[in-house]
Length: 479
Image 1 (cartoon, rainbow, N blue to C red):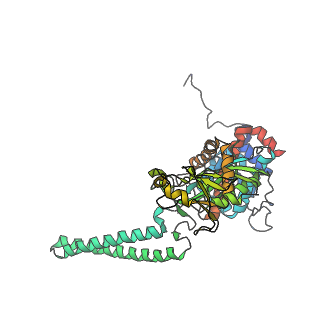
Image 2 (cartoon, helix red, strand yellow):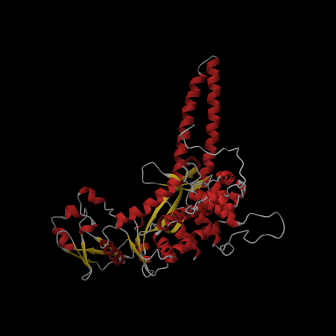
Image 3 (cartoon, rainbow, N blue to C red):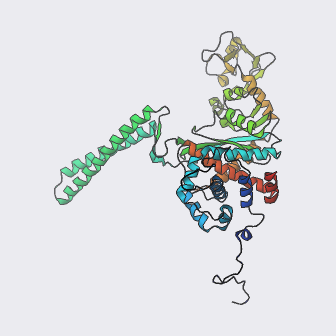
């Protein structure tokens, strides 16, 4: 085999065998993992087993298990069984653990039993990023994304799903009864065999109908009228594409717009983002250690009560207003065509008339004011494009001023929505590309939160290695 690069003879003995350290370069990311974990106070973070028991079989130190999981999530190996195999054959993991190879059950139990500690480690790494002065800009992009749970859509039941399935089974029973009627009028062995098959199918359908009736009672008994059989905490959620809903969890993330680091995250079971602005904004503000933070979010977070709750907290939301007026598509004037004058406290309509505040409060909500002009509306030529009623009434929330201030803030940031999209949606795409087709491996909300914390930590570590490099990051960790 001349003129080819040749390998070493695997049967050749060496007097001085190479050490594991020779196989791990100085710029290998596993050295960052070791440096970070060695600096942690695992006992203070709440890890079980940080203090060894005086009797019984010796256990693995939590740092060893942490290194296995950190290495796994950094290299897209989240399964405990795959981590068991890697610990036996992967040189980098052998170097990291000192050739310790726990079985898959021990690995899985560590993630299951140390959820609070693992989530605390994720927060500890964000604190490290803050100590390095990476959050001086204090601007974050917030968004939510759905992750598939370990629960098939057929194993999730809602009121509408149960009603639809009962209707389908009922139609199938009627169809087989009609077929059984026809088979009874026929004679011969073939007809008899067909009759037996139809009776078996009818028996299965009736049994299935009983199960659906029982499930209907269970669904009605729970507060949100939804039951998942495999993962009881997973919920059916709609996604952007029509007919592409999933059963899973909603991951909320606040991402720093300058360095694209995830500064705060949370897993919730609500399918929408309407009430997530305040908790995510406060979590991001606390994690970054700043007095004031600007939060950029999309229209899914637009909620007047949430924006009002941000007042005085140091959270400055930037969310575009939702245009939901039905009349826009038919050529009717929308509410945005009526200009509000804050000094005079009145509206100017498209015809140039003034709409003043009515003395009587709104009959719908106590916190809504009503603006109208009875005299002008009766003779206005634009009334057919304005309202189908005799008088146009413009409703204004008593705290509408906070929404106007938010809109003014957004007007000074014309590229805010582009920045939001480039910042946070890339993070979700990266996290989903690292996971399997099922996205999640664990069940129940608490365990899913732990699993997502490991994914977020792996993402942040990779970002920091990209920003600093391996050796400079190790020096920053140790100082």
